[in-house]
Image 1 (tube, rainbow, N blue to C red):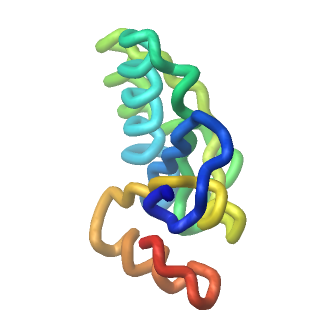
Image 2: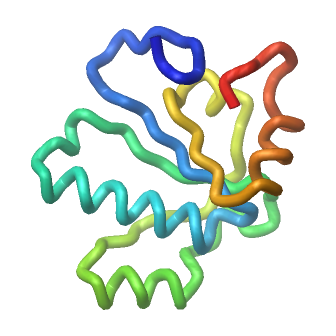
Length: 117
């Protein structure tokens, strides 16, 4: 059973990184995680995404500072910001928040009765 209480019928572990706007921290965490599992040859074992608790950056590219940091370190970054959806709470095995405020927001956004966060 996964951390979200769901049984994952596939062999992939689904990980979602979350911050406020999904243009800096969570986007960079997604890119670094994807890069790390690719380097280890285990990328097929993971489905990785990121999202924000707020909607004001939906569709935006990553922040230029995050993109530049990734570029300098050889980490590919391709992403468009999106907001967390109700489906994310059941789809992902692990939802990793970038700070305590994100955690509080996610708890408020979670479907009633959901206890995985």
